[in-house]
Image (cartoon, rainbow, N blue to C red; front, side, top):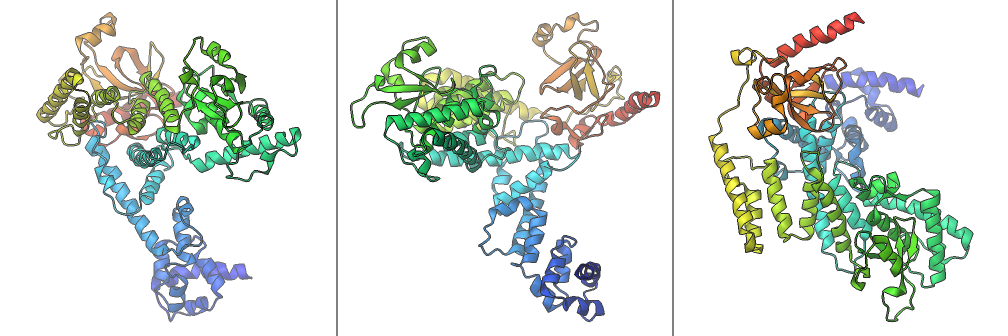
Length: 626
């Protein structure tokens, strides 16, 4: 019966709200319902925020039910933006109507900025000062980020350009926040030993779009600790570690009791959970990200050591990190407390090698060389993070396919946050900006980022004058070239010089020789590369040489290539091209081809019609034949 009343009332409310007539018979019937029933109706999800606004203006009773801090507006906020609710405490007073308005405004601002990015930055990387509009936004940053996430989560294969720039903006915002947190973390005194916290900051900075938090990672480690305690209980049911409460930092001093903990740890980690060192894919950045180490249950010596160290300390075993060359280790003191100790008073633990316990001689055998006693010493958090970032930096330099060098850029940012006066890395960063063409938005301005870096290098080390001078010269030359650039180059297929161009932007192609799938995002009537490139790529060996159309293509492996027309053919089974820059050029994937965004269509205004004809001829004919 109550359900019937609610259903009928649900039909009445919109009409009443629309008419706003307090004297209507239906309204008097409605407002006489119990408050709980009215609240249930208003919170049922059938009414929009505009509906609630109109309903609240109909009479006093409904206005009181729809008060700004009440359940009705809270439910409107929750239904619209559920992911934001975690930022509010149940005990806090919140003006939900005001929060709704502020979030709505932030969403409109976010969409306005995202929409502007393609027009502003289509022909270049988003410059170092391109995010200034975002930094000056009013209102909570979490609202702005939430709207960007909503854009990224839009269903289907549309809005690709919006998603492309929303991702870049979100990446930037989160990295700035994480970098500020890391810098504050690094200001802690040397005896602050939260190695895991520092490692998580590195993980978050390199994966800003992933949902990574110290709380979640600690919870996963706590679950491992519980398993270790269960095993430890079988070894020694009265072990003091079993009495530890969450967050306690007590240390066990008896070696035998510590040994029992390590035995239980080794069993759980390596036998039960199957953690292991990643020997097969050692040079993979995932091995350094703590959330991935826990998911994949594998890593390299330093990440495996941090996991092992964290668990051991929670259970009262005071292990310490050792920055051993080529193979990060932990050390376990065997000497008496307060005694004068040397390197032989420790056992060294190889977490990468299933927790194997090593002597000094065995450590040297592990890396195949003799080392000084200083290299067996304990290191602080900053040194541990330096080594982690150094590993990422080495991997970033090895990148081949990723032409954005994102890992190298991220690791340089992290390293220079810790050691801002590293001249060689500052030079590398300046060269990287120059190579990628990351310039300020206004071409007539000085290239602030590059020139600031170069000026800093010159101050730190005048001996780098030659390298600095070379980069400054080429940077200023770039500015002059940008000043002389004319407007957008428009390529018309109907022009006589383009008569040999067979394919159009947006078509899914296959390379005849190498077999890769790709999408065309640009073309030239003949090869426009220099003589050296033509010689290195052996273009002259092609039947038509360089006197044929060449196409800019985005390849499924993430690379960008320049392919000769005679080497391309239609892909009879078109599929989406998984390339990070697809959204930079295209707004939608239709299932057979990509539709260019407004900026690309300006440059190739006649291609879209040609694409439609090709799709009709190639894919429709194929469908009819089937």
